[in-house]
Length: 391
Ligand code: AMP
Ligand code: GLY
Image (cartoon, rainbow, N blue to C red):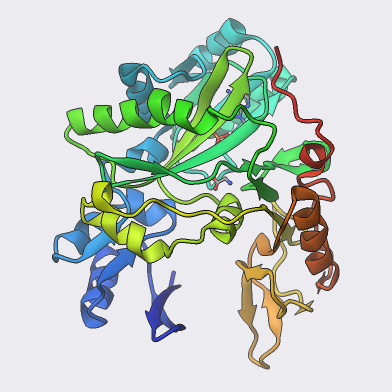
């Protein structure tokens, strides 16, 4: 399938059609435009080793090797690395048969956490109190030829911490909170993420330093020890449990939609730090500078998302500031239509989280998309001072 790749040219982006999972095609394009730096966004090309192929041509790449991207590509590999590195995470069993699945569900009890071992675009995880639903999901993953990971349930607010790394040195970005469930009050199915905000004024002030020391640094050391150093963006998804932060997942790329708010707060030029990470020179790079205040983003998803997103619906009011497009395209008549599940994000900054939240919802109010879905409670609990780490 042809995808679209952006190549910057003098401040404006130029669209070049290329299959982003095709190493040879991406490499040829990078050579053709004489790229100084290639930034590979999604997990699929990273897991497919596109970064290795481009790097082999002597071009700087921000993004891990295919082997290192297994931290996201396989939940079982991620668990092995975490255990070897002493990183706090949920206890888990990897299952290859229905009998192993049943035994693991009994071991951990409800709520059940059942995951597809392979890449599933954020939709391979079911968290349920209903054993029959857990069995059904696990069986469907096994039927697709993948292993199933069953985990201990982690209670507590979730946070996402991104570290830019050159394989040795890690630099954290601002922590953010994502909203994974489709519906208000964290109801409905898991999605890729329905909104986000940063910073997290309710979190312990030492959170980021603690996670760098307990998670990021040991993980980087373990990946180097294995001969698969991780250079790129290490996304640490955490639950802040009564026993401290525990890793829910690693991703090998910027998270969506947390990136929309984290980068809205970044004052330093992004390309410089990505280039330093890509060339193993992060220790000498200038410290990142952050803006004051807060940022909020709200995802507008299409009708039917996440199970069966409807596409081709007309969109209006989406050309103002603060609208970040994702699943949109221009139709033959030049009008804007939806082309994916998560269609766009309404993003705003403000002097306070409350101001940023109001401004983001004001951006959203001007957008129309038939049948669209969005949450009305993004950042609401944080504004109300109601986010609590269970004790
Ligand atoms: P993952 O793809 O592993 O990030 O899982 C997606 C979402 O499922 C997470 O963001 C959590 O909301 C939830 N989840 C995953 N693992 C657990 C766990 N062990 N305990 C509680 N919730 C979980
Ligand atoms: N927001 C979750 C993710 O990017 O995987």
